[in-house]
Image 1: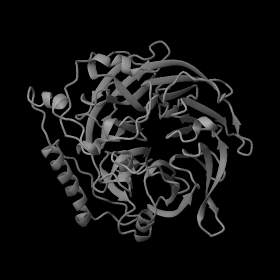
Image 2: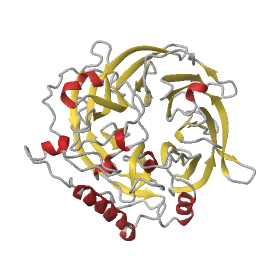
Image 3: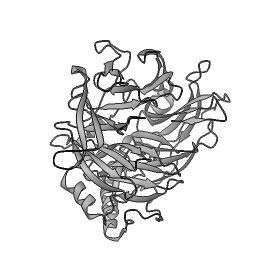
Image 4: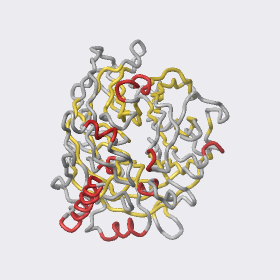
Length: 484
């Protein structure tokens, strides 16, 4: 219990930074890094702390004993150099070994070969989303539950050598936690949604980093009074994030209050809102509501759309909505939401619906986690959306969540795992812990073909494995590499 007390004390110390932190004013160009990184509260001592991990660290209410990770078994890297590479941000199945980035081949002849494993220093982070920098040299992965062990929450990997990723560093924000969606800045660095406050409540923040992954600011700034009041007035738990740098706007979608998924709870607090941002000032323009949306998990702009429209997933409704950011409502507020497509009974209340849209703006795919289904839509005509999959088909996948269309648009990469927070949580979704490399037919429909079974591969070495998210490198044309 002493360790838990220390953990709560540390969180209190972080929150106390509110008084001394001075976030930059909106639009300020030069900002000093604000992120911090702290060593583990319990250092790793060979032969001493190993028994503590398995025997003396029972689950506690909310915070967990900050025990060090168990050492990883030796791994022999592969010397193959495929043209298509998948990076998978993966949690150890036993929550005791180090979480890791797995580098695997997506080429036909060597598909599924694990090329390299890159450990992070800690365990039990519940690896969440993974993103890549604009130049393809840096990956960043977030930890959904890192906060519970008072650990750093964002982990950076140097992929200058794409076949031998190196762990670079980790950090945490001062005012926020629970890393979710990641978008690269054209000039280097990232925008990242942090869904919760420093202690996992509302409001969260939109984080901005520099090219090295150092945290510059947490938006909205406390000096931006209207935007701050906006996030305090109605649940602000940003999960989805989409940005149009040319149009100078961004959308974040509010999902759930992170702390509300942990016991004891009065129920998961789901949001019905999105926020429309002015990107240059990092200020909130307006709040857009999807009535009874019950968790707006994801939002993405449709490439090439004349009105810069975006698709948003309303999880409780099991529906796809379209957001028009430059239209105005009768009350004069900017940003209009309209229903676009109902995904059917298997999607309603599915807890998670995540999406990806092809770069030509014609196809959209949606993972229905509790429905064990991946839906495919032809959105080339938004007035006549066509479903390309059979909603009654039993697909060979359990708990699909993170989805990415390959750069050549020939495959869909889907991971079968969303969240399993264990005994401390009311949210534990089934998953098959596989990476599904699904063929996209010429008409946009899907043909389930090959998988990488992470749980099987790492059964003996890490108690299994849970890949949550991925990044795809396509190096087929060395003069025009693609990172997604």
